[in-house]
Image (cartoon, rainbow, N blue to C red; front, top):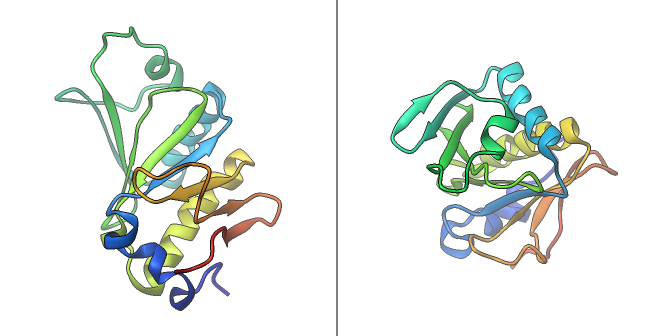
Length: 160
């Protein structure tokens, strides 16, 4: 059985209500957690593209990215956990893993299942919650997320 059912959560997958790119984050992380995510990307064989400024580069270690000089160019890690579904990670601080995911690519039960699987993979690897809020929304009010205590993705807000 799927973690979440489309009919129960479709409002949280509506780009008009949530923004096309809701914010997904793992609070209370470290350089080691970032490295585990980078290792997970490679272990799962997910497609990825790492960019620093205008250059596409090999996937670095977390330490190389997180401890760059303050004036270094911005970096972005694009990950496709499945074909046609893009997550964009922003490697800005060790203390929080954050990324955007495009809701327009996650419609219907298949989209819900894809997102739940992706959040679960990351949450299980880290043993931490992976939470989703509306685009630009407050982290104090996640709408859904992976709960490591229950080992599944759960609704954290009432559907609209």
